[in-house]
Structure formats: C-alpha cells, structure tokens
Image (tube, rainbow, N blue to C red):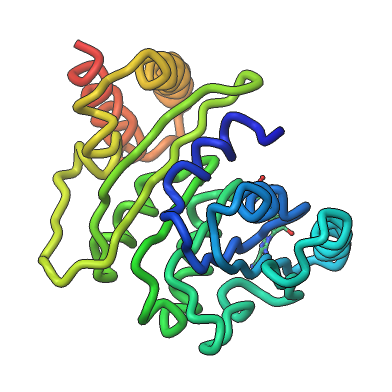
Length: 227
Ligand code: SAM
C-alpha cells in the first residue's frame, strides 16, 4: 500500500529498471517495485542512520536482499559504477535540496537515462537544473494528498538543446497545458498567498521595491494562467 504520491512516482519507473532511490527512508518505493517484479535492481540510499535502518529492516522483512541494496551515503554517493543504475528517483524533499544532490553527484549520472523528481516545493529550481544538465522533461504530474499538492517531474537524457520559457519553468510545460483540477487548486491557493504578501509589502515602510515587483510579476503570471 503505497501513498498515491509514491504510486504515481512508481508509474514512471521503466520496466526492469536498475534504479536508485535517494532519500529512500523506509524503502517503500523500491520494495513495492521489486515485490511486483517491476525492477531488476535497486539501491536505496539514505544519509541518516534511522531511515537507513528502516530501509534495511523493510528489505529484509520482504526478503528482497538480492534485489535491493540499502546504502548509508550522502546523495548520489550511494551509487557505484558496478550498480549500472539507469534510473534515479529523488522524492519528498525540497527542490533546492534535490538540485544540490544532483549537482554534487553530477558525475554519477553519466549513464542515467531517467530522473524522476518529486519536490515538495521549489519545482522551478528542478526544471532549471534539468535544462542546464542534458535532460529534457518527458512527463509531469500533479496530485493532491492529505491537504498537500505534489508535483512529479520526469526527465530523460537528451543531446538536444532544451530551453523552457519562464512560464514553463514556473508552472511546468506539461502541467500548464493540461491545467487539471489539482493544478488549478494549487495555483489559486498560491495566488491568495501572494496577494497577502503583496498587501504586507505595501504596508511596510522598509520593503525594497524589487521585492514588490517580483511578487506582482508572479501574481500577474498566475492570473494569466488561471484565466
Ligand atoms: N523518498 C521517500 C518518500 O518520498 O516518501 C522519503 C522522503 S523523506 C521526507 C526524505 C528522506 O531523504 C529522509 O529520510 C532523509 O533522511 C533523506 N535525505 C535527505 N537528504 C539526503 C541526502 N543528501 N542523501 C540521502 N538521503 C537524504
């Protein structure tokens, strides 16, 4: 029983992938994939001892030691070249942390064909990183669960030059086309939040004008997209 969020992430893992789940915590995602014979190999990476023990426990409990390797390591350092990892999942962290993990471990990604990234915030950071690092967004999803909205960004390796428009970086090239209910709800909420910020800035005497301009630009962009 995976959360809807991790089930959606699982849908984007290619059949028979050799995957690394970085920040795996209980290793629920690779355990689910291995139990359903959907992957051939996985590394479950964790930088914190407690979650690493959780992952190990879950893997042993399910009898999946042959398929899933738990590793105590920082970010992509969990990946060894002999693992022949082709798919990397980083889910349930902020966008800035995800991009810093990707940047620090960039050399580990040379043979990685697919990245499946699920930031809790800061999605635009991820899209910028993707376009600057030889990947191209191939799918996106947005869903709401337990009062939170989650985005999933799937990026495949490419030699093509990729350049997203500012609007695509902010909203997601696929999500902004689809404009589903979860997308509309997310951005309606964000619009309300930003309007409050705008009011606060206007009533404060010391706020820099650039800050106000930034917020107003974002408000305008959201209003345009929501129509
Ligand atoms: N990926 C799972 C999910 O989506 O449900 C667990 C998400 S949990 C909120 C984030 C996990 O990432 C934590 O267990 C944390 O220890 C781990 N983490 C944070 N920074 C990390 C890093 N640099 N390398 C490996 N794991 C990290």
